[in-house]
Image 1 (cartoon, one colour):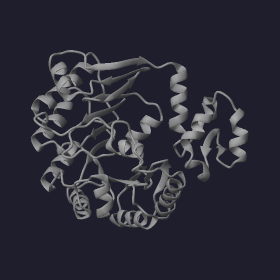
Image 2 (cartoon, rainbow, N blue to C red):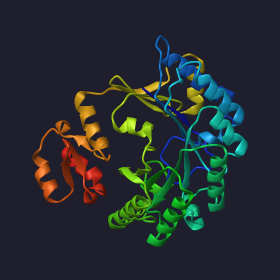
Image 3 (tube, rainbow, N blue to C red):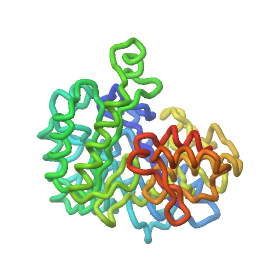
Length: 362
C-alpha cells in the first residue's frame, strides 16, 4: 500500500497545469487539515495501513504553514503505521519555504523533496507563469541541502513556447551543476481546463513532434552522460534514487489518495475524492463519504493500464500481458521495441513514441 495526499493550494495558478488546484483563500486552515485526518480515520477504520511510501502532491504542499504541516504530518501517524515508510516525498516550489520550514519538514518525516523549478531561464519562467526567479530556485535548493535533505528531485519542462535547444541545454547544465539525486523532465502538453489549451486552440501556441523529440533526446543524452539513469520516459536518477512511490504506480500497486481531487486504487476499485475543497471539508468533517466516480476495474482494464504504464519503464512489460503478438514483428523491424529477459522494452528510437506504441499493443 502507498499513500498520496493532495494539497490543492497555489499562490499563483500556472497556465499549463491541469491538476485540481486553487488559491488558498481562507481554506488553507486547520479545518482543511482536520478534514484530511478525518478521511484518514475513515479509510483506516478496522485495519492497519502501513504505507511503504508517502507522497504529498498538489498544488503546493510546501505552501502550508509550519503549524498546519506539523498538525497534518503528526496526525497521520495516529491513523497509519508510518514506522517503516521507505520514502516520504513532499512537493515544494521555490519561495514557499525558508530554512526553518525546510528543517521542520525534514524533522516531521519527509526524506525526499520534489522541487518544481521547471526552468532556470527568466523568460521561460515568465512564459510558464511561474512566480519565482532563477535565483529563487537555486536558493531554494541550497536551503533544502542545508536542512539535511539528501534526496532531492528537480522538475524541468521542455517544448515550452520560445524555448530553443540552447536554452534547454542551459537548463540541463545548470540543473546538473546542482547535483540533485533525481530529475523529472516533462514535455509540455496542453491539458484540459487550462489557459495554455485555450491559447493552443486559438493558434497562439503550437505543437511540433519533431521539436519535442529533439529536446527529449537532448535530455537523455546529457543526463545519462552526467550519471543519471533514464528509468522511465520522464524520469532520471542516480543509482538507488529512483522514485519508489512513482514506481509503485507504474507497477500497478494499490494506493490510497486523501484530499480533494485525489485518486485511489485499492483491491480493484478506483475512486476520486470530491474535487471541491469546500465541499470536501464539509463532507469529511461531517462523517460523509467523500468518494466520487467509483468504478470496479476489470482484469482487462488493469491489463491495458499495465501495458501503458510498464512500457514507459526501463524494465519494460512482461510479454504475457500482451493480448496479441501480432504488432511485435512490425514494431521490432522498425527498431522501436525489443525483447529482454521475457519483457518487451522500448529501444532508444521507441522512447519518443511510447504512447502510440502502447496504443498499438493494447
